Length: 602
Image 1 (cartoon, rainbow, N blue to C red):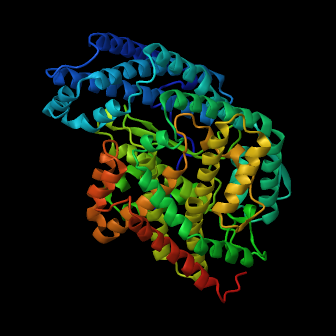
Image 2 (image 1 turned 135 degrees about the vertical axis):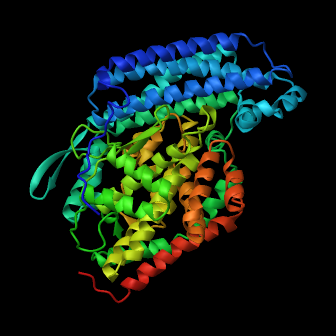
Image 3 (image 1 turned 90 degrees about the horizontal axis):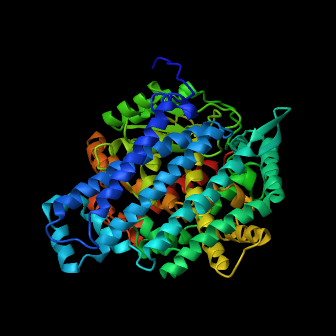
C-alpha cells in the first residue's frame, strides 16, 4: 500500500472555524440558548400529567429534546477538544462555563418532563406508551418514568442542578486542569526531559527498564507530594454524590451506576465471580514474564514492557496503513469509515507538551463525524489506543441515523465497539505472525488487555466500592486512600504484582468523572461482550458487518441483557456466558506459557 503521509493534528475548523475564539461557535451558543427557551415554553404548555390523546404531542416533545441533546453534544465535544489539545487555553474554559449553564437549564426542563411522565396514571401511561407514535421511544420513555426521583421538590432539583454545574462538575474539571498542569522530570535516552503526565505514562512501555522505573517513581513521588489536594477533590465529589443518594433513598452505591449502565446486579455479580475464579492463569503469565526479565515477580513498572528486546518503532503513517488494511478484512463500511478518519484529519496524535493525558473519542452528531485524541509515541500500545478510540468513533458512525434520545448508550456498551476493534487487529496480526517472537509480542499485548480487565479494572472497582462505603462515615484521608488502593491491587492481582502504583488513585481520571460513577466495570463488560461478538464475526465473515451495525444501533434503546439476548442469544446473568469468554483468554495465557517454557529469549 502506498505511503500517504497522514496529518497528526486534527481538523477542528471544519466543525467551528476559529478555535476557542470562534465567532461561529459563539453564534452557535446563542442558538442553543434559543432552543432552550423554546423547550421551556413547550414544557409549560403541559399540565402535571398526560392524557390519553397526547401521544403525537409527546412524540414531538421527545424529538425536540433529542435535537437539543445532539446540539449540546456538538458543543461539549468541541470544547473538550479545544481544552485537550491545549490545557492552557483559558478561552476554552470560559466557553465550557457558558455551555454548562445552558446544559444545566436543559436538564431542569428535562426533569420536569420526566416528572410529568411519572405523575401520569398507570392506565393512561399503558395506553399512551403502546401507541404507534411512541413506538420508537418506548424504552427511553419508560426508563425516564421509572427512574424519576420523587424525593426532591422542583425547587430542590433546581438547586441541585445549579450546584452540580458550579460545584460538583467543577471539581471534575478542576481535577483535569490540575493533572494537565503537572510536569515531571525523567531521564530518557541520556537526557532529562520535562514531561506532562500523559507523556510520562507513555513511558511505561519504553524498552529501557531504568526509564520505565524512573517514570513510575516520578509519578509516585508527585502523587505523594500532591495527595492531600487530590484527596480533597475525590472526597468532595464522592460526598456530594452520597448526599444526593441519601436524599433519594438510594442505599447501595452501585444502584445508580447499574441503572446508568442498564444492567442488573446479577449480571455484574456473575461477571466478577467468573473473573475471581480465573486469576491463576494470569498470575502465571505475570510470573513467567517476570522470570523472562530476570525477576522473581512482576514489578508494576515492568508490566507494559515489551516481551522481547525488539526496539522496533511504529511510525504514525505505518500505523494508519496497518489499521486500514486490517479493518478492510472485516467489512467495507468499517474500511471506508477509517479511511475517512485518516484522510480528513479526525485524529490528534502529535506528541507534544500541554496536551491532556487522557485519550478519548468525541462525537459530533450534527456533522456525522468524530474526533480522536491521543499522544502517539510509536509503540504497539499506542496503535492499540488509536484502534480503541477509532472503535468508539465507528460506534458514533453507526448511530448517525438514530434519533437524539436513542443515541445515548450506556458505558457498558460504549466499550464494546472499541474492544472489538482491538480484537480485529490482534487476530489479523496473529495470523500474519511468522516467528515465535512475533507471536509472543502479540500474545503479550493480548494478555495485557486481559490483565487490565480482569485484574487492574477489578482493583479499581474494589477500591471505589470500599472508598464509597468509608466515605459515608466521613472524609477519607489521603493515607487511607493509598492503603485502600494497595489492598485492592493486592487482591485483584492475586498477590502477583510487586511495587504497585499505590498512587494510581491520583492518576486514574475515571474516579473523578462526575457524570459516571464506577467508570470501571463497564470496561470489563465491554471486553467480554466484544469477545462474544468477535466469535460470531469469525463464524459469519463479512456478512456479519450488517448485524454488527444493527447491534450498535440498538445499543441506545435496550438493556444490556436484552441486547445480548437479541444479537447473541445469550443470558448474561448466568456465569456460563462469562465462562465462554474467559476460555479464550485463558488459552492465550496457556499458549504464552507454552511458547516460553523452554525458550531463552534474548
